[in-house]
Length: 143
Image (tube, rainbow, N blue to C red; front, side):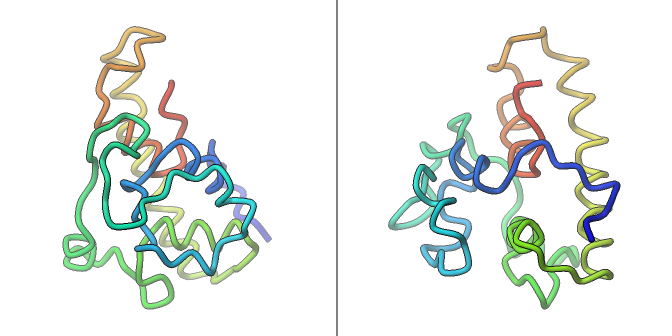
């Protein structure tokens, strides 16, 4: 059963099409993803490519930082987006799900209001790093 609090604005498929994580989140290994998600995905064949990101900027922390902060779980060693892809495909792990959904909500509650408060409506070039980060957390970056 899906968590009633978790209402992402974007699917993993849409996120991949818009351009996230420099096209390199899965480091070239997409076996766990449905083929339909990959048809229009912006993926890099060699490594992180900032040009593949929707806003053309790097945004976020490294996996080393994620590990140091305790944000990586054994079930999803690549982090939040790996968890979200698996969740979207129907996997449920109640403890891990609660942990990741709490992180997702906290991120959106912190960053989306900042974009709305500091950017004119329709100015999608305002705060590109924050918008890229919102996109990478399944929030609509065009708010």
